[in-house]
Image (tube, rainbow, N blue to C red):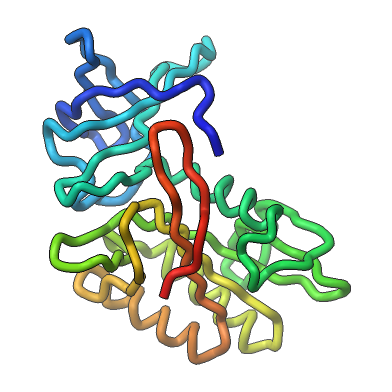
Length: 232
């Protein structure tokens, strides 16, 4: 995925009201950008951090800028726009990069499933078998090691998706969770039990029921992002 038009660089002034971020541009002007991230963004929103944002001149949009990338205090690049994760995974699926899911004959997006009225990010068809895939964007990293963790805030929605996937796996259907790690320099992913113990417990139950849990790393730059390799 290439950023087109190219991203603009600035410095983060602050994030506020969850979906807003004030950014100082190179010329000293200030732009208010949309922050497409509902999490805490722990370790991803230090004031004064280098950030990159996109612009969109759609007259229907109130905010013409969207915050895309940040340089974390640990020197990593993170894509904090969680809406990018599904597109990245779809590109990787179509290119055969995610080898565990290679060979499907059809891909559908936002497919309803489960007893709790969920929508799977993707439903892949292999001959006559449907495989339901949920995608999570991971940006929480730490200074002491090269591991990342999910979630960065309590996520009832994430736990719900795990319950739905667990039920599918228990019924004999193939169910897959993909962690799209939108953070550079990461070698492994774990559940952030210290932040959301219920999610961590649900993940353990999902794995025990047969849900396939995959994690893939990305190559990130202000020019673009690409899923490149599996992680532990």
